[in-house]
Every structure is written in C-alpha cells, then in structure tokens.
Image 1 (cartoon, rainbow, N blue to C red):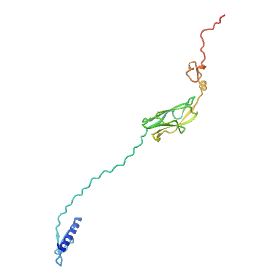
Image 2 (tube, rainbow, N blue to C red):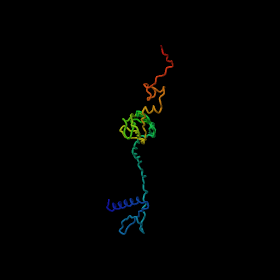
Image 3 (cartoon, one colour):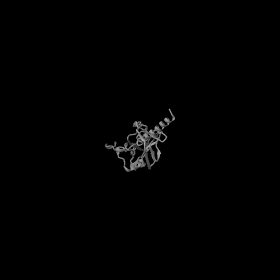
Image 4 (cartoon, rainbow, N blue to C red):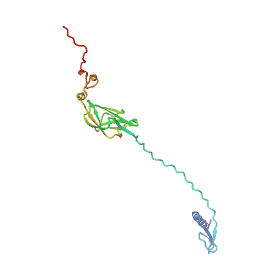
Length: 213
C-alpha cells in the first residue's frame, strides 16, 4: 500500500469521525492542480463533489439500573409512658398518723415495662431500692412538709420518666390528742388505738347490793 493511499484513508477516517460527531458535517473531494485527490469539509467551487456518506449506525445507550441506596438504620426510640403519677397521697395533702407512717401508691400508663422499675424520691433522696411494686411504705416520718417524686428507670439505672416533686404535709397526732378530740365511748375500747382495754371502765351491775346482817 502506497504512502499516498494510506494518507488518503487516514484523512477519510478523520473526516468520517468528524462527521459522526456532528450531524451537519459534509465531506467534499476534488482534484488539485498537481493531480492529487483532496478531501475536505469545505465546498470548493469548480470540480468539488460531495461524498455520499453511509448512514451512521447509532446504538441506543442502555443505562444500567440504579441500585437503591441503603437507608440509614432508624434508631429505636426509647419507650414512653403517657401517664406517671402518685395516686396517694394527693399533692399538697395532709397525712395524719401518730407513728408518721405513709403508704405511697404509684400509677403508670402503660403498665411498667420489662426491665423497668419504680424509684421513689423523698425530699430529693432515694427511698429504698428500686422496685417493680407500685406501693412504697414509709415509716416514722418527721412531722412537717416534705417533697415526693417518682421515677421510672431501666436496668442500667437511666431515668426514663420522672414526675414533678409534689408536697405532702405529715402531721403526727398523739393518741392523747385524738382522745381529747374524740372522747372514748365504751364500744371504742380495744378498737381505737387511743382507747386501750386497760382503761376500759367496768360496766355497772344491775343487781342491787343487799347487805347481809
């Protein structure tokens, strides 16, 4: 193959590539003054002829289906309680007990979940160990005003829910004061703590006393 033919083929290949890149590109050919065939994309007046190009075979571009992106894992929210309250005593109530005893009752909705416990706070301090029981007995409380609050904690001791502190007033009334406020009747002895049996008066006999001579 001559060097001239190779050059011609190279020119044609380049021009075909240029034609492929633009749908409006055209190729023309003519014989120059030296008798050489020239290919160009510019029409030349005179003997230039347009070269008929075979239509291009265009392959449709096939897009590969996109893989769905992995969604980040949604963190599991900690369970919530709609209601947490102290049923007894009611806020700002007065509790009268000679020994200063008090039974605190708790209510939650939903009911206490597994691995959760109640924790009672009395004047900001924990009272006894956490418990799943909704009843906390308190004994020998000092008279005066105190603050009660309850928490729900998990197995790690983390607080899940907490009630606001609410006041309770403890009044330790002595038995003698109760007895003065409500004197004992005969039927009260042995029933009311301030009316012990040892103070029960002896019933009067209906049989008249007749002296013997």
